[in-house]
Image (cartoon, rainbow, N blue to C red; front, top):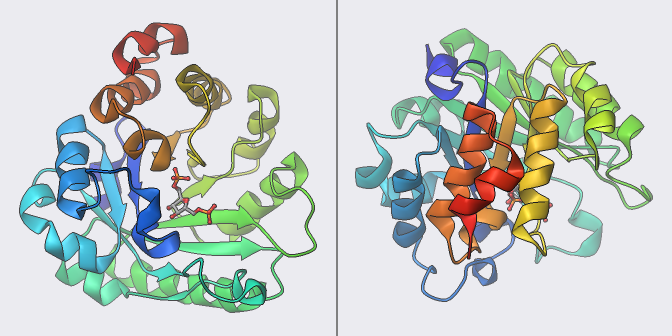
Length: 262
Ligand code: FBP
């Protein structure tokens, strides 16, 4: 039931909104510092779900509850930790809290290839065990990342990370775009569960981001989890709707551009 509220015909466009914790408030443009401002825009844009932290979910519940499914992010790290501790996500919430909030999913990150990989994989595995026992879908932020890993976006590494994520029991996988439909198809084909593209830093040109979304869909990907590309755009709602039209209506990037102009 919960997964069915997130996915529409097997696809989803999910709003990622945990950046105040992961990156700090400097990610948010002037005028959008308040979580309520961004949450209002996200709800009106028509996302299939919103992934955020418990404090933000609580402070904005009157805006999203009953309108957009919540995916509670239960692991995190700040960017102000020492460099050697940037490759570990720790617990910042629980499946029990997700249930109490009426969430339709939980999300947690694993940095595959990190020196602390085993801590995150064990943490993820126990999140899956608890979630399975209560019917809570689990989305993994499946990110190859480590101090000695030269290319986080390498197709072989990303597909390994996604396969490992599926083996641990993830219901949805959010991972890096590998640069082309051809390479992303290789990622999708090793996963028995839906694979969604992680948005990443704001693209220089909006059309480049929309083309990436189109190629993810043409590769068999199941959608996008996007934060910065949308909330840093002057045309927040238009860009979100452009992405939704590509993912759910099969629009071409060039056609969707008419909605997203800044
Ligand atoms: P974006 O679309 O902004 O990239 O959001 C996706 C996300 O995974 C967020 O959930 C998270 O806060 C952030 O990216 C992590 O960013 P980084 O790659 O800098 O760790």
